Length: 139
Image (tube, rainbow, N blue to C red; front, side, top):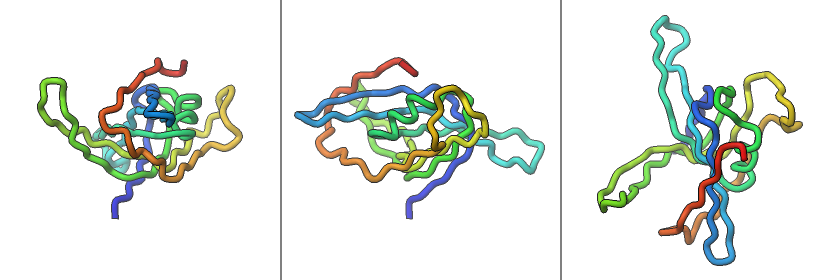
């Protein structure tokens, strides 16, 4: 079973990428989460994870999340091989998020009526070798 649940604070502003492959359009959102390792000890240990959201959920994250917001996410751990421009292979583990919830308890101007967004599986077939177009955070 590949399932992960994390609670922490967004460590970056969400960054949106859009892509077109044929007549299909895709939107992705990447951002980080900082998770305290153990709140019961006095040691301050924080782990950082990279998150990816897709489709309507990516739009939700881009619109409502900023660095420092407390969130809870559920998803699957992924570790795909990535080819560098120099031809080498490296790995960048990330979580493909299936659910994100704003959990900081504070309401900000423009926040949605619901504080969570759940997506079903998004069809990402046909994206091999596609070019990404990145937009600035909270554009």
